[in-house]
Image 1 (tube, rainbow, N blue to C red):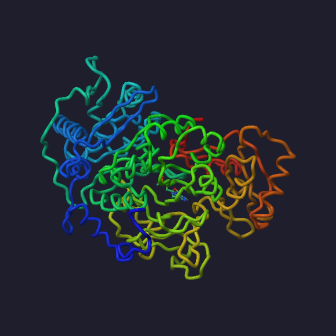
Image 2: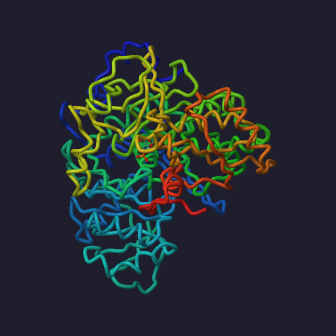
Image 3: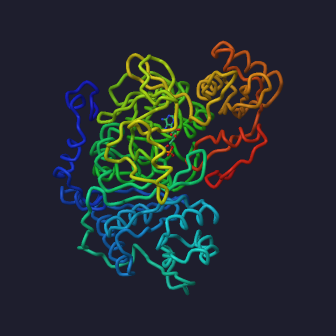
Length: 566
Ligand code: 6R9
């Protein structure tokens, strides 16, 4: 059973307004996301239901009901207003995945502020660029990360409040205050800021895998899309225990790590640790997780440890698995069926789209390696790269394009209207990715527009090469990039990280080459394989092919502030 059967009438005739109606919003009405994710759920009689099961890396456990998150977020809102912060002010959240992060997110929204979530692992430079760009007024952080803020404070005249949420009674430095969520008096009523549909809500900085960070601005009516996609794609139901592995510094961690599950009144589990096969499985077992939203990078790491690791745990609670962030290789889907008895369902979207736009719904036949179909209410196609006209020929590769107008679409890039406007051509929003569409309307991802390899005038996507490599028993992960070639302009070079138990050798290279030769067209065949211990990735787990490519071309590597430390 699932919330949506693809061929239901509900699906065929879906309009965004149907979702708004489920949230009890009148036409063109908006309500504060903070209210919809806490007070409204309590009003429905779920005040005592668990909203958050939190586990820390040391094994600590904290639990919060919907009434707890309502009261604590009220208290945050009240506190921010008391500091003199105003609706529209940018308030940055710079914390590990602790309960205060999730709950203050609602608090900022309740007082009308714009939330700016940033990865706590960011260093000073990354932090400075984003806070300076947003002209942020306040930052919430912890003792562990406060030093980074202190060191850049002189360059940020607008940053008036540094709120440390895990310190008490210490002598605060310049602009510093302490606030304890647990000790602050409960606030039963707060004037929740009355929002319009277009009132700004979240400012998410994204650099994707390329370019300088840009702030994608979202609005309160985005919840109309986040609510219904969480219900239909993640298939969230009232008795689920949902685990989204993403950090709220990444859009997945807010759209589907806060707004989606809480607007659906679901209990979510949060684990404040990095990747660990054993710990992750034990977490699922302990908390009886039913719905799991993760990413291909993590799935590939799990694959590395094999089915043996899975079999040590009781993961029978898992009901639905979804993936996002990178192309989901066919091999990963097949493995997941073997390991968990169910496939990972792919979901494609971006910081800019705010919610899932192309996906394998529950109930839709999965074609391993395809992203699935457009979400109801989303008009998606592929367009020609020069004319921007929709491609009518089945299977032809083009740029993924969406018809603007869905509720969670970003409204601008902060102070960067020009770059924003450049994303639109002939009435389409261009995602910057390439794909083809088959005769049943399934989308097949090819690569990011700037990752595509041009070899002798033919465009080759890294995804098919990497997927073929992944099928080889020794390959844990790989990245295919173009390297300069005097005759063909570019030829394919593959970087390969091996599974435990395999070591680089020319025999292995030859074996891999022979293996993929049967799967790839001659044009897509790598001319060279370089074995590497690991691949450079962003904090959201995306392989940064740009860095590998720049090395081959002897170019500057550009902005690396989202690069994960190894
Ligand atoms: C949610 C998120 C967006 C870019 C996007 C594309 C890649 C995301 C994908 C996928 C293939 C999928 N991407 N999901 N590629 N299949 N299912 O990831 O947002 O960080 O802004 O990245 O990620 O290249 O354009 P964001």
